[in-house]
Structure formats: structure tokens, C-alpha cells
Image (tube, rainbow over all chains, first blue to last red; front, top):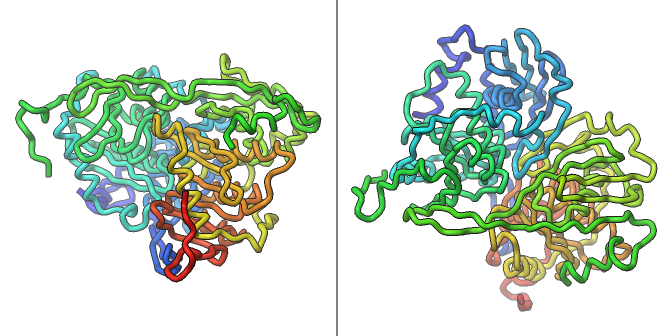
Length: 297
Length: 297
């Protein structure tokens, strides 16, 4: 399934869901050419990812400027508002209008956001991410999260997921310098998002998920190229995803949160190698010597 | 020169400089052991970097919570205040008192910070960094920066710097998941700082630099393991460093800023390869075929 297949599910498509917000579908170039000088002293042309400011106005009030690749700004805006806990549901939003000519996203809510000044006042600058400013206390909602206790990740499934990402066409392959996040249900890739800030990528996925009337049933797995920081783990848990796989490592706060919410945190996942940092009981080792091998694509 | 040699230069040492603030020298463990399960289903012990919250109180007013490795919290606090333009000089600060038991850094200023509420009100969430929230407009001060027009980077010097970093003992080697920044004058490493957020690392260097009465003369070069984002480039330029070398790539905003301030931005620097993204006229190619080779350590 690619993004084109999914676009019909969004309210901007031909089958609007009346409860969902109206969204523009703003388009922008994702890479640009750049002439560089290499170690031989010669000039050559490479591509770099685009990076553009998107200033959010909520009911005409300026909230924040996000620096983004610009692939899915409307989903990003919704996911940002959700993950900052400024809205509880996308149904509170009437419309998101993105205009790249002015770098603005105008959000119109149905009933306003209560106490928005107060709720955006406190700052926590967190680790290694593109959205360091989390309004409100980072851990406030953690203990309310209930991940499905029975959720499991098969080792063969993990290898399939890592391989799917490896062969996926991407801005990273074309231009580097972006982070990718992806949502899988069982082994099936539902959405692959890249951004210059990896928290933009996970917020975009959160925004997209919140728009779906029906997500396929199955084990939800989240993949990220970035480190498993506290924010990444919290956001995964908030999206109801009990397993996160990363190419990279984990930070101490990411570990604490994963342990606390029962999230299976897998890192250093490349070339059929990985480390499980937390909740390894969720992993089913079906590719160990003596177990029946499962072919990976 | 290592950190122990430098400690005598700080005001907390035995030779306080009266104009500099008094600083604690809070200590903390930088890594911790973690039992993980690997792809064979076996348990083993690795180390992960520490990550702790440090809440800044400026004249008893809570400002922000930084998530940090905790190696040099006092320099980090000073660099943060400088790079956020909340102070113009470390001399405005009377003392920084860090207490890890409560995760707090108490900053006492000599005369208060004028209009602190107003100056911390506007947010820009920037790219891929550990301190996404830059108070005030990101580009406001860019055009006031004047980097020395004659500064040059020799190719042999670049290779020396990359090699110095490669062989340097580090938390990254022990535990992964941290970013490193380093300040060189000519080929000499003055300060090497790691943190879970790479903007903490560069802020720490800025704080340390601001405390030095005399920095050695020579070409200043900044090294970072992270991407050359707009913030990284701006902060380097603000520190008067005209050349930045990265192991990673560049973002579009990072490129714009480097071009605008005349900063030589070099990325993808590993194994005697590199790409110069901006201001390649600052590079002296002294290791091309036909030039006299310079031995690298």
C-alpha cells in the first residue's frame, strides 16, 4: 500500500468523513539540487532535503513554527496538536489550510482550545529531536496509557519489517539528512513518513492514524531510524503501539518510559541483528536454531 | 589538552577570575549498565548513556528543563543562556549552582534579565536537535555576525581533525546514542563534549568558551557528529567559528545560513572523504595529487 492508495481515506479526498476536518493537500518539492565541492576539489551536484518553516495559527493565534520537509503538512499539524495534547481528537478541528507561499498552516477549531495560553506555557526541552518543546509535563499522561498485554513481535516479523524499510524508496536515499518513521500492522507497511525532524515524522503518522475510521486489525509496530528517546516512546505508546523498532539505540529516559508503560523497545536493528532494551517477553524467537525458519522477503 | 587541564581556567578552580560567575562542579555518572536480550535470545549487559533532567531557575524563576547527559552542566547552562540570547555575557551571571539530587540549576544574575517573560514567549521548533525551542526569531541576529574573511581550512588539517575525533575516547564508544561536538584551534583539540542532545553539546562549548580569558590564536574549527542544521550553523557563527565539519549532511536551512554568514560547511567527513556544501573558497586543497602530502596522526 502506498500513499496514493491511502489518500482516498483522508477527508480531503472524494469521500469526506463528516466528522473529520477539511484538509488542504499542499504540495512541495522534497529535495533540491546543490552544487558541492568534494575531496578531489571537483564540483558535483547532489540533492539535499528541503526544509521549510510552517507557522501554525490556531484560530488566528500564532502557536509555533515547525521546520519540516513538507511532505504531509496537514497530517503533521493534526499530529502535532494531538501529541502536544492541545486537542483530544481530530474532530475538534474544523479545517487545516496549508499555504506554502506564506509558510502557514491555519487551523480552525470547532469550539476553540480551552486555556491555550496556560497549556503552552511550560517547556521541556527534550533529547535529540525535531520538536524539543513539549508543552506541559512530559510524563503527565504516561500512567494512563494501557498497551495490550498480549501483543507480541515475532523475530521473523521484525526481520521482515527491517527489510521492508531497507528496500523502500525514500528521500533519505535520494538526499540523506532526514529521519524516517513507519507504521506497520503485522508485517504490512501502512504509512512511511520522512522529515528533517524525526518528531515531525512521528507526529505526521499520529495525525494520519487519527483520521482513519478503520485501521487494519493486527499487531501494531512502529519503526524509526532515530534513537528511542522518551518522546519517541511516549508518542508510540500514546498511539497505542506496543512495539517500537529502531536502527539506533536508546536513551535512559526512553528506557524508563518503555519499562513503565510495558512497551517492547528494540534497537540496533540491522542485518538480522538487534537488541531488546525493554519488555523482551513480547518477542517470540521463531528464527533461532531449532525453530522453523520463516522466509524474509 | 584534556578537561582536567582546563578546569583550572574555570572560576570554580583555584584561580577565580573575578568577572566570571561562580560555578559548582557537579559530578554524575555518564553511563549505566543495562541487561538486554540480543537476536540469539541470550541476555547480555551493555551500557547506555545517562539522561537526566536539569531544570533551570533564573533568579528563582523556572525557565526550562533540559535533558542532558550531565557531563558539564554549569557550562551547559551558561551556553544555553548565551545562545538563547537571554544574556549577552557570562559576566551578567553571578553564580550557577547545580544540584543533581534535585535535578536543578539555580542561576543567580547580577542585575536580572530584562523582559524575560516577553523574550521567552516566541517559539521556533527547529530541526533534529536536542533544544528545539529557540526563544525569539531564529534569524534575527544572523546578519550582525561577521566571520573573519581570511579564515581557511587546509585539507590536511581537516583530515587531522577527523582522525583526532576518530581515536578520541568517548561515551559514544562506551554506550552509543550521544552526539559529540568539539572545538579545535588549528589542529589542536581544545574541548570535546558529548550529550544526548547535540545542541546541549554545542551550548556547553559556547559556555566554556565564554569563560576563557584567552583562547589560543589560530583557525577555529568546530566539529559535530550531527547534521548541519540552521541552529548548528548559527551557533557556530555566533561563537566566531567560520568552519564547521560534520560526519553527517546538511539541511536546507543550515545551507541558507552558512551561505548568508560566509561559513564554510563541510559534511560527510569520514575516511579522507568530504563534501563542502558552502564557501568552498575557504578550503585549501593541500592533499591533492601533485601537492605536498601532510602526514596525518
